Image 1 (cartoon, rainbow, N blue to C red):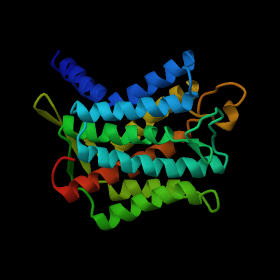
Image 2: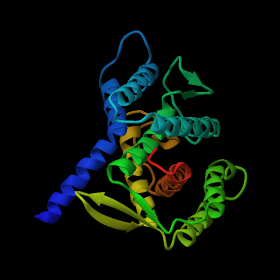
Image 3: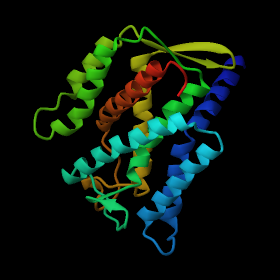
Length: 254
C-alpha cells in the first residue's frame, strides 16, 4: 500500500507539472469540436495559450525565471517549425492571421509546454543531478542535436551517432527526485527515453485533434510512425540540457 500511495503522489505531482500541456490538449479538443466566432481556430489557440501563460504567472504556478526559460523554448521551437514546414515535413493547413511562413504562432507553445513540464517537475519533485558531465561536453552535444534537425535535410542524419554519444556521456549520470520525503533515483538516459515516449503519445493525440498534419495524414489520420520517438528523445535531451545548464549556472531553482 505504501508503494501505491507513493505512485499516486508521484502521478499527482506529474499531473500538475503537465498543466500547460493539458491546457493545450483541452484547447485543441474544444476548438476541434466547436467553431469559435470572429477568428480562425489557430488565432483562438494563440489567444488561449497566452491567457493560460498569464494565469500561470499571476497564480504563482510558474515563476518569472521559469517564464524566461519557456520563452526561450518558444523561440527555439518556432524556428524549428518554420524550417520543417518549409521542408514539407509537416504542415498547418488551416487559415490563420497569426501565421508566419505558414506556421501559426501558437505552435511555439507546444515546445514551451515541454519546458514548462521540466521546470515544474524539477521544482515539485526537488530534482537533483548526480555526476553531471562537464559543460564542455554538454553544451556542444545540445547544439549538435538541435542542428541535426536542420542539417539532416542536406547531409546525413547523425541522430543515432548522437544518441550513442548521449549514452556515453551520461552513462554514470543519475537524476534523483523526492516523493513524500523519500528520495528515488533513475538513470538519466532512461528518463530521456520515457519523456520522449510520452511526448510521442501526446503527438498522436495532437495530430488527431488537428494541431498539425503530416503528409501521410492528409487524407485520413493515422498513427505517427514509432521512429519519431527518437526525434522526441533527442529534443527532450536538448530541452533537459538547457534547463539543467541554466539551473546550474544560476545555482538555485529557476
